[in-house]
Length: 485
Image 1 (spheres, rainbow, N blue to C red):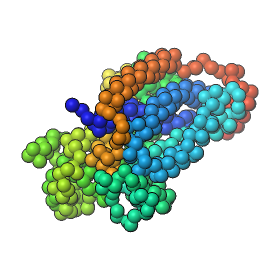
Image 2 (cartoon, helix red, strand yellow):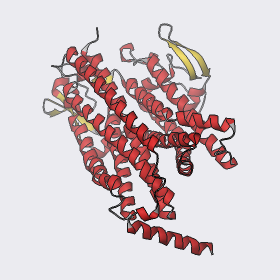
Image 3 (cartoon, rainbow, N blue to C red):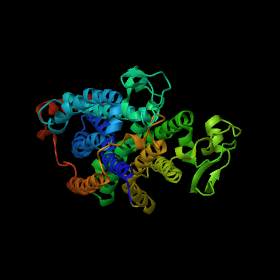
């Protein structure tokens, strides 16, 4: 029978993985919108204006669902994880307050202008609002990742036990944990903890990929159907450039993040690669299955590659699971699979994006009469799933790899539970959340499908725009004509 700890972990994992579908899309779409509006201001071409308006509507949908699904998690801290919330309250309070000040107010303050200000403000003001909403979405990710990274690599804090600050290195035991809490003594050391910047860059680039491949998927769908061809071609080009750049950045930031894991969480690295014995010439897994009984990985491995990646030499000794107590091991099988799933999808996205850039350069990208090009477009339509699955797999790797600690090296997950919540309470709320979130997802899919079926405002012309927008476009066209002479 499931106990309260397992149920609470399942509930939080379910709610956060469902929520995490939407913020990456909002962050990535924000970047796309800034580029499209900048192109509109630069060229005065009405097509970029129509593109920005259409993708703004998609952005508004993802933002709304993201807010609705994110609120629940804040309450779960207090209901299911009260002891944990008390322990980290000083740390999380600072980070979440910073999110509210620097992110939420900035994003929500300009959101109305972005969504409804097309005919009410000038083009430059609207572009400024778009930039502010994009920055606000990024700042929100900053503070959430900072708080989560502190759980992975705590820094800038002291432990207060019964009102007294304890000496450095003090770790409360099971009896002391109820009367202890982490207190910040260096705010910036907490913000720039050993893993925060590496993880932040990796997360943000993953968000850019999510937004870019959503635009690519919908644009490819239109081109396959022969609809909104000019709109879809322009959207696809912009999104393909973003996806190509982001895919390479994701490879670089992932390598940097892995270096941080090697230094700060060697146990997690050992689980990610299924490395049971501390050894030199440590292999790097490509695909495989972990046999926990025999403590061995069956599959395709590259001998010595993990040692090379860790220490630039196959003779580098890599710490294995045998260097740690068995009770501190995370779930090796799951972590190994999630980690390699993330890597595999990441490499596939690089191939998809850069194949598109090559086809564009060769002049084949929009030649849909060729069967292989049409097959590539089918892959593009499905590619929207890639960043989502990779992002989820990456978070599972990071969070499950921290177990059995909820705050690494300080508080075990079992110690962070609320004292008064029972398994029946958690199970009932989990069933309710599953029902409500399923409905929300159905609403999201329905509304997104309607927006895709309706398509962009392709018949909009300059006379339907506000006078300030018409005047700006005329000035742009006049300067372009002058340059042409």
